[in-house]
Amino acid sequence: MNTILFPGSFNPFTVGHRSLVERVLPLFDRVVIAIGVNSQKACEARTHERLDAIRALYAAEPKVSVIAYSGLTVDACEAEGARWMLRGVRSVTDFEYERNLADINRRISGIETLLLFTLPEYAAISSSVVRELQAYGRDVSEFLPEGPGKP
Image (cartoon, rainbow, N blue to C red; front, side):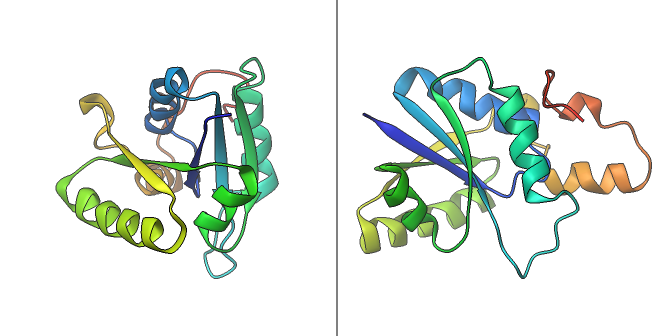
């Protein structure tokens, strides 16, 4: 089975994230959305709430599974049988960072990284921007996917 793992904090899972998943679905037998748990990072939404929301969003898509993991992402790939990792690129800065990370991941594990450029309409959207807008009471519904997983 050809599996790709899409790691991130997904706090929250945005329309940009959903776009990447939708674009990669035809290419792989299985897409694992993997929520990284970092004990040193404060997250407003608890991991189980993000898991439940993303699972609800993809409940009708049998090719998508959603997990939480801690530790190295390449170890999560290996545990899930994924030889590929999906990463989104919004800017030149993202590209440089992701390229370096992909090189290290390939070197230590053999895991290949598929970089997908974000569609232009989603390039300015990030989870941190959405959280900031929420903190100031702004409506962020246009940045979150429609469906049962939407808060």
